[in-house]
Image (cartoon, rainbow, N blue to C red; front, side, top):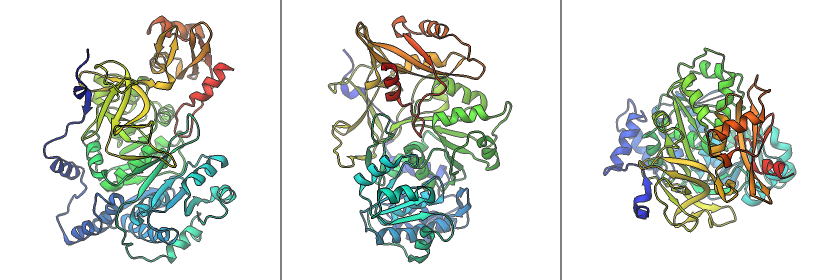
Length: 542
């Protein structure tokens, strides 16, 4: 029998004086560097209770203390903290004019200052921020607007036609530089602070790898500081960092790290589009010290880096949103040093565990441990705790208040306060988490369980394989058989699939070796780099 259930709830190290710990971490990160308690600081905190309006408070604070320093660097240049404060005050008034506190604003914006402004202004106005997937087709845009029922749309000029077609009745502010309707609205709005109590809320849509994206409703303000403090206990972000956010800001990782950067007072570095070939030079030119990126972007960046090139300023690379294979982790260490921090979590819950560079060296494959008040729990399908080392469903309690999907309850995702999103894994004796895949991706062949992540890791260890994905195909004899899709590295196009099958068979149990291996040019992925397994399952079954 396993240990009692209470001993199988793994949590971060919470000190007896957590408030002092939070304060220390913020001081160490330089949030109040060079300052002392002052009238400006006191006024800022009085106007904006930090636990109620974290983003709005952060911008107001930085504008009070460092008005002329850089808040955002984007394709258009530099926006100071004073400029960000001014523009988000005005935009908050615009939001209130179009629906009032509690209304919803949908914005389809590429990475740039306007996306940041919308997030902060929603917090200032007490409205709901709904960033939209900028890669969505017309049907998905229509689905989001239909379910969210916004009172205002804000979008780059390139999305104007599509949005007017699906929602002609809604007011639309177009972002297109000086003279655009967005800039005119800001110029006409009052400059004073909108006196709204209660922080804004956020709807982040799931990636839609298994169907239509679902809007995950979250209260992002209530525990913002304690969650950021837990992040800082593992990731050494600082106020002086120049923080490049590569994924689009509608993605959980980018939105979360944008929020962290604003609260810290770091400079956010943004580009409207990610281009792997030009990114290494861009990182050097911008003296980027910290970067948030999804694994597929990181792999492409490393592929694009000339041999021998170094990024001397870069000290933190944060990944999340998809699995970081061991091969990728090893490449990062070889090319960039011990800079890689891998976050695991979910759209519904935020991040749950962090693997530090040291963790990844000492415990290959781990997703790290929780920090602060965050907890994880491994259970069987009936909700019973499983013994240490045994695979089960991963449950998490992160402090982010998931309120269900828009128009739907949280049933099936929330279980007695724990968030369950379908991932499977186990913890070791020290509480380090290891993922094995998703419950609905598990393949049962001849009565044996096969977790795709294990087979994919074995395939990607072969020098010819750039990336791999494994799915199950129905089979009348075995129930399912293992089918793999692989993309090969340049110069290795001649490798035989039998060679790859033997390679996997030598590293896993024989029944886990793929029955079929198909070579493809690239795996199908969504905009944030997650493999679209439903497409691969359809191919395998065709």
